[in-house]
Length: 186
Image 1 (cartoon, rainbow, N blue to C red):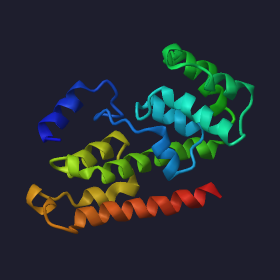
Image 2: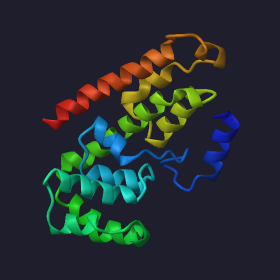
Image 3: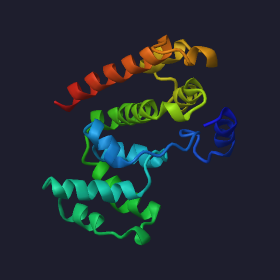
Image 4: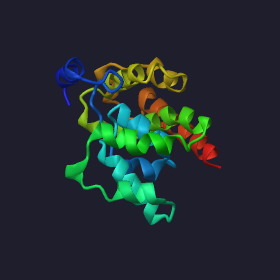
């Protein structure tokens, strides 16, 4: 993806906390971290997940035998019946009330980790991945955990080198976040 396209995405973005309109599948995030309703809400509110993610997550909980009548009702909603505001108000908000304060505070870190991992796995599609990371850093409010990744912004020539500091820092960030989030699950 060329830098001009990235600039265009930012200018045309309707969500200031997701300037690049990055969408990740909820199934992808579930493979990385333990997701809860606070995470679903954060990701949907910030357009990292589509509203369909709420239904997919409800189905996931049913498969794990962790459902109740409200989750079953949500899981049975068809895609053409999804109305974002109604799903948030009638279901997700109620489920978020069941989460702890800590879980709500961790939601941003979990979704940031999922986004950064997704971008890392797909870094080859970007002309300059460092530009994308700078935008994500801004969108998430300049998190301290990412400072090492953005403190070294390489030029395009430096990005062409194997194992440069930028990619090493990015990989290290992902490793540290994975360790932190695994500890939080216990």
